[in-house]
Image 1 (tube, one colour):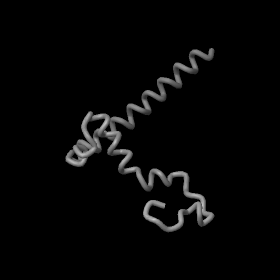
Image 2 (cartoon, helix red, strand yellow; image 1 turned 30 degrees about the horizontal axis):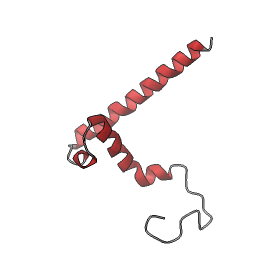
Image 3 (cartoon, rainbow, N blue to C red; image 1 turned 90 degrees about the vertical axis):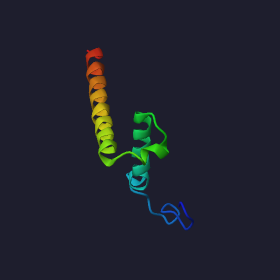
Amino acid sequence: MLFGGKSDRERGVEPAPDEFQKSYGWMYNAKLVSEFENISLNEVWELNVFQFLNDLSYIKVKNKYDADKLERSTRQSNR
């Protein structure tokens, strides 16, 4: 648990698989944009919303494109 108290695990409750995303998704996305823009994390907070969301959209589509391309090349090499 971040600020004291018993964690879900200590209480015998397993956290949901997407607990990381629910708790830290905003920070993870900010870090992705920081790396993409090659700027500090502090500078990310200064970006306008449209640029931030466009960057995230590009990163998502690019990752999907790269994964599909890798899958196609893997299938071709297994023939």
